[in-house]
Image (tube, rainbow, N blue to C red; front, side, top):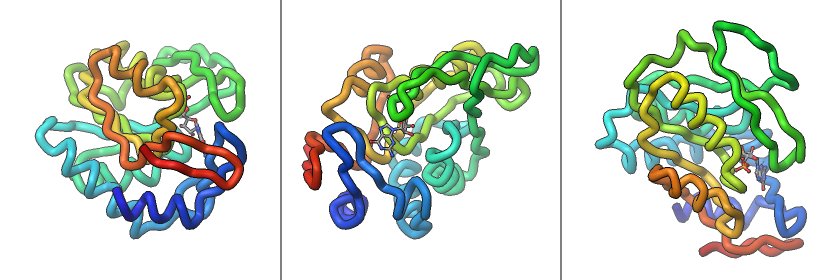
Length: 189
Ligand code: 5GP
């Protein structure tokens, strides 16, 4: 998506070879016009998948997920991050390793917001090693939902995430695929 790539080149800050900071339009301040375009793009790509719900992970996935759910006219469900296991019967939970924090967290979702056989689209801001998406898909499997696709705003294609998700037969659509990061270097595939 050209508009997004231009924005990344203009405002993205590559902290090192692994981390891209996009605080000025996605992770802290949000460019709502760009989010609307992102929502349209995902909604158009996944339009034939009969999506019942868009699922995302707090907090940075919420803006693009909301825009997508709005275009598809379906609800959005936000999976929550907890510091430790909370053993609540009303919740599904799984342990996920955070790439940016290099620590584990417990991902949870309320059982009442996921129904058997629903078609789910996952939307997230970044794809790195795929842990967040795979954790989300484990919870969707517990709920007997069908994961019909994954939409990613920025994929770091030099990391293992796409391979791990595609190995599970899941379609991954990324709007910007970065092949290389370095201090002041951002290169696309
Ligand atoms: P994964 O679970 O695929 O290893 O990492 C994806 C999650 O980590 C995303 O939900 C995102 O919040 C965070 N993340 C991974 N890499 C980056 C990055 O380069 N920049 C930012 N801002 N977040 C990242």
